[in-house]
Image 1: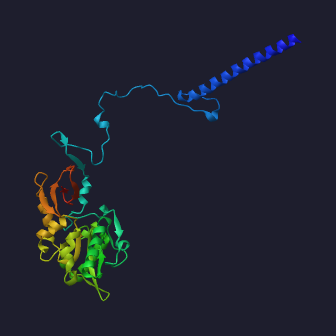
Image 2 (image 1 turned 180 degrees about the vertical axis):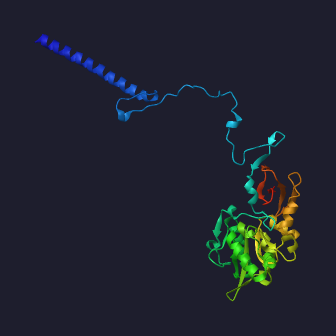
Image 3 (image 1 turned 30 degrees about the horizontal axis):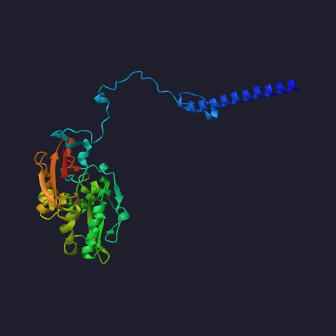
Length: 344
């Protein structure tokens, strides 16, 4: 009996040792599994729990880190891509690149009998009726303007309403395509004859209406649409439209320059400060464009407007230097170059 008891104790002792060794093996396996995900390509066993960390390959070639990259391999930004001018070691200018077609885009494009315009350049037309306020009327449901001038147009009409108390002014014409312009010309030729008709209606391709930045206004009296003559209540427009960037495009006694008869109803957007400069000097757009084209980057036209100093100059270059410390605007002249406006 004593021998059997000693054998039993020996078996239990050996079993406990084996169990202890098994537990140590399991614990060791657990720590191996915990460490394994941080090693590249380790499979933890069960496919659903597999975490593979790919090893980083050794470099097989290419440009060494201490070599300068090939300049041709660096992609260019579309506009602010060049920094050509330095002063005292500090870069003060960037360059704006203009495409050749940009000559026919902008608020200062000149459209007249000598300089035509392709309506295909207009991309942002909008229905004026969709923006109507109680301050003005819209004659017809298809009057279109460039959306870029809708905000100043509404501001002008709201200001007139506040000043006069009248909402009788209506926009009766905005953008026109080539076909519609031809129809108007044919109608006037039939009524007035070819020579007189051309004083009132531009040939297709030579109307400011093609650009969507010009408009004809009308005036309602007793709910009947009348010709807008710019006197009386509506004299406010030729006197104040410049405050919103608009000019009376064909004023009286200037037909020798514009080659268009006096049209008190036709207003054109040129933006600020240009409308102010034109109004201040009693110029027409042709005179202003000619004047600005005499001023280049080194000899800009400088004037003040609303407390700011403006510099305006003309360039035929498509790479235009712009100071970092200025607001700027660039417009084509629709002839051969660009008019740059800087505000310090």
